Structures are given as C-alpha cells and as structure tokens.
Image 1 (tube, rainbow, N blue to C red):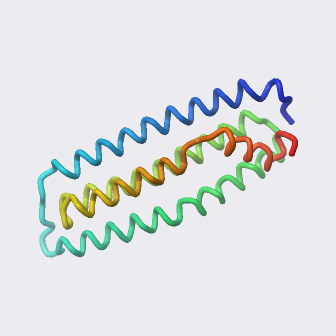
Image 2 (cartoon, rainbow, N blue to C red):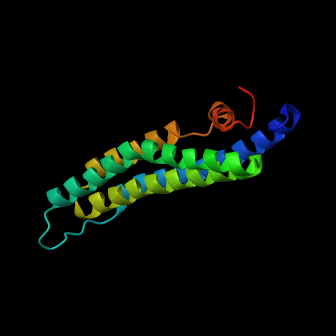
Length: 159
C-alpha cells in the first residue's frame, strides 16, 4: 500500500501523462472532422454508398457500445496483477496502457468516419461518427477521482 504523502506526486504525474495523451488523441478528432469535409468522394465498384455507410455505422456503434465493458475487463486483470506484485507504478502503467487501448479503439471510429465520407453517404453521417468519437473521448477523460477509485479497488490506498 502506498503512503498518502507518496501518492500525490505519483498520481499527478500519472494524470498529467494521461491528459496529454488525451489532448493528442482529441487533435485527431479535429483532423478527422476536417478530412471528412475535404476528402474527395470515391465509389467502391459494386458496393452502394448506403451499404458502406450502414457497415461503417454498425462497426462504429459496436465499438462505442462495447468499449466500456471491454476496458473494465482489462482493468480487472490489471487489479488482479496488482494483488500479486503490489507495485503501484506497474498498476498505473497498466492503467495507462488500458487508456491507450481505449483511445486506439475510438480511433477506429474515426477511420470508419473517413471511409463513410469517401465511399459512403458523404460527410453528414461521417460527422456523426466524428462527434460520437469526441463525446466518448471526453467521457473517458482521465480524472483524479477515477484514478483514486482504481487505486482503492486494487487495495493500493485505504478505502
């Protein structure tokens, strides 16, 4: 268990790293918003734009609705690992890796948005996907409360 006087600098460093990463990934949302408006259209042979849009929207919604459950499973593994090694820095490093994995998963929605804009029904449904990604990234924003909750559930700090 980490001592309270040792926790604050470790926690602040961890949050600063995660928030910087979040800002960098949020910049990709802006780039995707511009891309879906400016990229030229390209028809995919026999596949209709409506079919492309339906497919990319289905994938985007699946990624969006399963991201939380998926990340919770990863966090449970991280907490179980902490029970064995009792190293807070490894626990926080695992937390950071899970956060990166969630952001990478959300980036796939941006990729789907670009496909929708280029070969699907155009920029309007693609912007929906971009906005969905932005909202999910903002909901996943790293907070001290969430990190302390992880530490508490892992037993790294007292309840």
